[in-house]
Amino acid sequence: MEFSIKSGHPPKASCDCIVVGVFDSRKLSTPAGELDKLAGRYLDGILRRGDMEGKSGSTLLVHGTPGVAAERVLLVGLGKEAEFGEKAYRDALAAAVRALKDTGSKNITITLSELPVARRNAAWRVRQGALVAHDVLFRSDQLKSKKDNASPSLSAIAFSVAGKDAKSASTALMQGIAIAQGMNLTRELGNLPANICTPTYLAQQAQKLAKAFKLKCEVLDRARMEKLGMGSLLAVGRGSHQPPCFIVLRHLGGKARAKPVVLVGKGITFDTGGISLKPGAEMDEMKYDMSGAASVLGAFHAMATMKLPLNVIGLIPAVENMPGGAATRPGDIVTSLSGQTVEILNTDAEGRLILCDALTYAERFEPDCVVDVATLTGACVIALGAVASGLMANDDSLAAELLEAGQTSGDRAWQLPLWDDYQEMLKSNFADIPNISGSRAAGTITGACFLARFTKKYRWAHLDIAGTAWRSGASKGSTGRPVPLLTHFLMKRAGKL
Ligand code: BES
Ligand code: MN
Ligand code: ZN
Image (cartoon, rainbow, N blue to C red):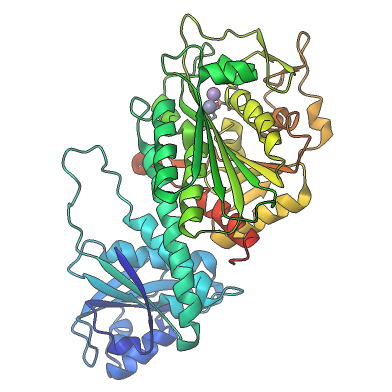
C-alpha cells in the first residue's frame, strides 16, 4: 500500500474514489459540502431521499457524481457532530477503508483527515489514519497455502489536509507507517504457532531485525544463564525440549552517556501452565503468551525506522512452559538472579519468574527507567477487558508518561495501585517470596507486586497486556498492542511528538 498526503483541492483530485464524511443526521461535513457544491447538491439529494443517515460506521458508495473528477464518492457516517471525537474519527476511517478494500478502487483520497478532532492537530489525524488503515488491511495468511484474495485492488491511500498542515502531516504519515509496520511485525510473530515460533525462532527474528537496522543483538544461551544465576528463568524452561534464550537488543541512537530506557518483554512461546496444567479450552491462545516480547521487537522496528535519538535496550526472556519429567514442580524453590529465593507454588504463574531475572539483569544498564510488557494475568482480562492494558508503576511520573502515550496513540492503559498493603499478600513459609498469593483477589496487582520486589533500583512500570494483545473468537488474532503506546512514549522522549 502506498500512502501520501494531498493538500489543495480534493474535489479536483484524480482518483478512483474520494471519501467524505456525513454527520448524523444527514449533514455533510465541510469537505463533503465543498464537494457537493461542485456536484450541484447531488449528494445532498441522496441524503434527502433517505439513503444515508450518517450513523457511525455506515457507508454508501455513490457512482458518477456530476462535477467530480473521481469516479466514486464514498459517504461515511460520522455519528452525531456534537459527539465527534477520537473514537468516532477512528471508527469512520476504519469503516471507509473496510468498505473500499476489495472494490474496484485502486487510488482513494480520504478527506476525513481534514475534520477537526478536539485537542488533536492534523499530524495526529494523519498518524492515526495510517495506523487505522494498516490495522484494517492487515492479513494473517502467512501459513495459508493459498493467500486470501492475493491481489487486493486498493493500492494507494491519500489523506487530504489543509495547505498549512502539509509539512507536519507528511512527517506524521512517516511516523504512522513506521509504527504500523512495527505493529505488523508484532502481529505476525504473535499469530505464529508455538511449533514455529520457539524461543530460538524469536532470537533469530531479533537477530534479523538487528541486521536490517544495524542494531546490536546478543543472545544468551542456557549455559550463560546458568553461569549468571538466572535460576528463576531457567526453572520455567525445564519441562520443554526447546532451549531457552535471553535476547538483548540495543538501539543506541542517543548521546553516548544518555541513560537508556529498558524495555522488557515476556516471551513465553507457549504456556501450558506446566505441571499446574491449564484447562484445555482455548489453550491454543497461549501461543500469544510471547506478545510482550513481540511488542518489544515491534517497538524496536518502529523506533529504528524513525531513527529515534534515544538509547533503548530490549530484554526478552524467551522460554516455553511445558510439563515434563524435568519440569519444575509446585513447591520447588529456586534462587533468582537477584539472590532472592522463590517458592514456585504454581507453575502457571511463570511470566513473573522469567521477568524477575530479566528485571535484575536490567540493573547493569543503569537505566533511566524500565518498562516491562507482559500477558501476565487472566485477572487483568477480567478487570479491564480488551480496552485498556493494566499499568502499575513504582514512579508516578513514569506512569503519567505512559498513560499519556496510551491516550495519544489510542492504545490506552489504565493504572492500578501498587501500594505496599498488597505486598502483604505475598508470603512464603519456606522462601523469600512465593510466586503467587494465597488468594485470587487482586491477581493483576499481586503479579506486579512480585515484580516490584526486583525493581527497587530504578524507575519502573509494568504493562499487563493479557486483555489487549490479542482478540479471541471469530476475529481471533494478535492486535499489535501495545506497540503504539510504547512508540509514542519513546517518540515523546525523543522530542518527536
Ligand atoms: N499467560 C497467563 C496469563 C493469561 C491468562 C493471559 C489468560 C491471557 C489470558 C499467565 O502465565 C498465567 O497463567 N497467569 C495465571 C496466574 C495465576 C496462576 C496466579 C492466571 O492468570 O491465571
Ligand atoms: Mn501461565
Ligand atoms: Zn503465561
